Structures are given as C-alpha cells and as structure tokens.
Length: 164
Image 1: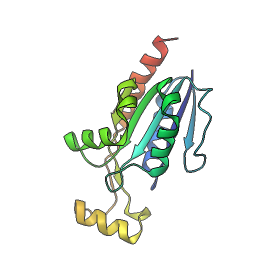
Image 2: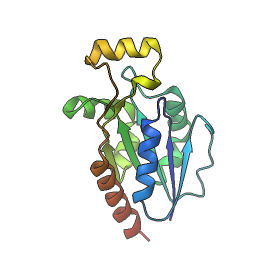
Image 3: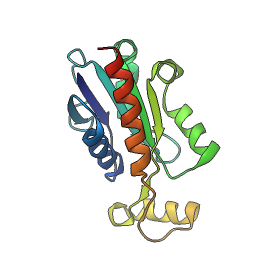
C-alpha cells in the first residue's frame, strides 16, 4: 500500500501529527507539506490522508484549493481526514465539518480530531495577542493526543488492508 499524508502547518503541530501518524501506519508512507508542493500527483497512491489545522476558524487557503482541485481524484482513493485544533467536543466537530467537504467526510475510512497546540514561541505578535484574548493562554500549551493518532492509524490500517 502506498499512502500519502498531505498537510499545511503554520507552526508545526499538523506536521508533527503527520510524522507521528506515519510511524503508526503500515505500508509505504510519504509525507508532503503542501507549502512545498501544492500540486502533488495523487495517482500512485492507494490512500491519501489530509491533515489540516484551524487558524481563525478556517483551514489554510492552500489546503482548500488542493481539496477543490483534486476532489474527484480524492473521492476515488482510500481517504483519511484529521484536524488539529484546540477546541473540544461539539465545537471541534463543527470545525471539522466546516474544514472538509461532505463528499470527503462521507468517503473517509476514518477521521480524527487530534487536539492541538498553542506554540507562542512560533507565533508573531498579532497571533499571540489573539490567542491570549480568545483562550487566556500565555505560554506554550500542547493538547496533541498520541493515543487518538494511534487509534486513527489502527482504523485506517485495518480498513485499507482489508481491501487488499
């Protein structure tokens, strides 16, 4: 199985999750930052996992463009979707549903809310001010959940391998 994990990461959390996820996945896994290559060839891959993060309530424009330009190709693949965000419960679910089109959410073998991080050490002044005002946090905080990442991989592995 050839699996591609694509993501956009502003401060490194979504990339960190992609690397953790790749450690748990079976098969030949490639990780690709859409900031480095916004137009990857998806044809050689059996599965594609899309990782996104929320900033100001939205995923990145590059990710939205990648999804819209490849929606039909993605719908023909084994799909996994994950979101890194600091919201929890219904708020996180709502952000997930807003981040990914229904066509992909319905097609996904598995989906995950991996938690997130506030990395003040990587934020600019404006980002720090917004995060402080919205969350009350002033220091780096990590709520990235390795157990959820591992469970996502377990589900994806079992679904993709049962079709082999």
